[in-house]
Amino acid sequence: MRRCSTLVAFVEEKKRSCAPLPRKAPLWISIGIFARNEESVIGRTLRALLNQTLFTELTSRKINCEVLLLANGCNDGTSRISEGVFASERDNHPCVLFRVVDLPVPGKFNAWNQFTHSLSSKEARFLFMMDADILIHCRETLSNMLRLLETDPEAQVAVDLPLKTVAPGQKRDLRDRLSAGAAAMTQSAPAQLCGQLYCIRAEVARNIYLPRDLSACEDGFIKALVCTDFGTRTMMPGRIRLAPRAEHTFEPYRRPAEILRNQKRQVIGQTIVHILIDQWLPELPIPDRQRLGEVVRSKDEAEPDWLRRRIDKHLARARWPWRLYPGLASIRFRRLANLEKTRRWTCLPAALIGTVTTYAASFLAWRFLRRGATHYWPQPSRTRIETLASKNAL
Image (cartoon, rainbow, N blue to C red):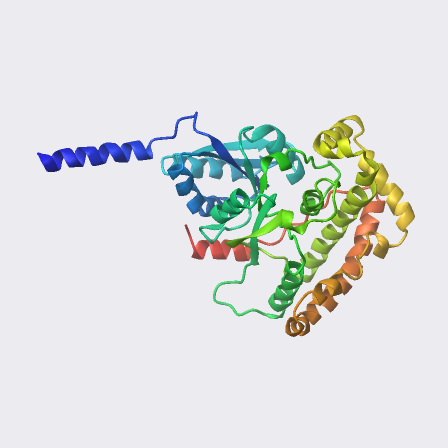
């Protein structure tokens, strides 16, 4: 009889621990996943996300969390697959509120603005921004990113380490080594913000509104605003911090044509960021910088082509492709100088090839912008990330 009563008590306690948290429990975390026609990888991406220790920790802290899949302009099975994953995982994640949101307008920037300013819970204190085509292979990644912001008052954004996929069972070829060298140079610069995955304080994110003609490099725009307190202080790299033991895997551009197109995208984005941060932002009075999100949103609504006009003026002054933004021609070698001497020699080929590629990409970007276009986002192949996801099926 005693064993029976003990068993009943155990079962009742188990029911209570697995029951959904009451709605009055605080909702601290909102996770936005940006997807555009990702049916080939979205299922495994979501299962890898939901395998994170963060959700167990939030349940033990009696804190709610929401996960929003933002399908922007999708015409494949991304939404359907996501709904299926969420339905199968609801009982296993009692602290999580799941939603799939279909946005008819394509584009990550519109989805980012919708998530930040309209769709995410207003009571959320931290927002995770995540691309749908990555795999979070380290189970403590999100927990460590959140913990960093909860314990470091200076940090406004927590990032993890992005790792490029290598085909399972294959050795790295020359392209992989050059790609690794380029990544090492990029990571040598302070305050690196990878737009694929980061966690940002909600009050900071909600003072940012991405202009409709920003095109690429939203991470460069956000980084500049965060590290200067919206243009009111000098650069403070400590505003963006790398969380310990936090990593994700992504599919890199490997083919020469893909790399050139990606560099073209980067040059277009950095040019527009330069126009916004170095030219337009200093013109604003301090009170307007402190409510920058509202200012940008109002300008987009009242003057839809305001940024396009500034781009045209800048192109008239710049005249040559390599003058689109300061440091375009020398950035690879400045980053190379940040490395240790032994690493400089191994990364030198990547710096040389990268510089030539950047020059070629600057001409393509210059010609693209002069035609009046701004939106350009090439997609890498998915062969490696799909193979890696299949091998490590979650």
